[in-house]
Amino acid sequence: MLIKNLTSIVISLLLVGCEKKNTTKLKEKEKQHNDGVPPKNKKVSTNNSCNIKNALKIIYELPEVQKESTFVDSISSGKKRLSFMTDSLEIDNKSYYMVKTGFNGELHWETYTTFFIDKDNCKEILVDEVISGDAIPLDQWSKIKN
Image 1: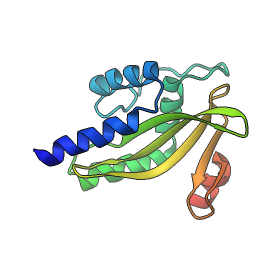
Image 2: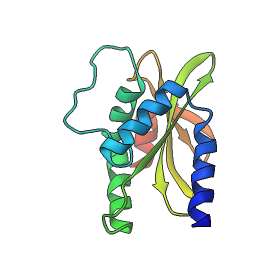
Image 3: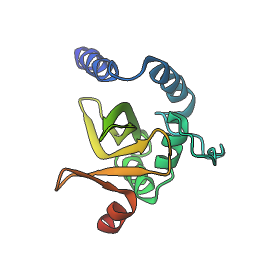
C-alpha cells in the first residue's frame, strides 16, 4: 500500500509541469481509453494545426510504437498497455509537445522513446536519440531503429 501511494505521489509530481488543461483532458481520456491509448477509429486532423490529441494519435500509430505496445502486452500477459507521458517544452525557440512512451510498472516508470512534436505542425516530429543525446528527425530515427 505504501509503495502504491509513493508511486502515485511521484507520478503526480511529474505531471505538475504539464499544462493543466491538457493534463486534465489527458487524464479523462486515460480513464476512457485504458492507459491513455488513443482510440484507433478516430480520424486525425489533416490540417497543420496540432493539438495533444492529434500528437498522441500520430505517435501511437507509428510502427515502432506499435512494437513497443506489443512488447508491453507480452511481458504483462495482456494486463498492462503501453503508457504515455506528455509535457510541453521549447527547442530552438519552437514549441513542442513531448510525448514519452513507456511501461508504467508498479514501482517505476520505464521510458522507451521520447518524441517531440511541433505544436504548429504535427507532421514535424523529432525523436530523442539516446546514444548521441540529439533530437533527430523521425525518418532518420526510423532508419537507425530498423
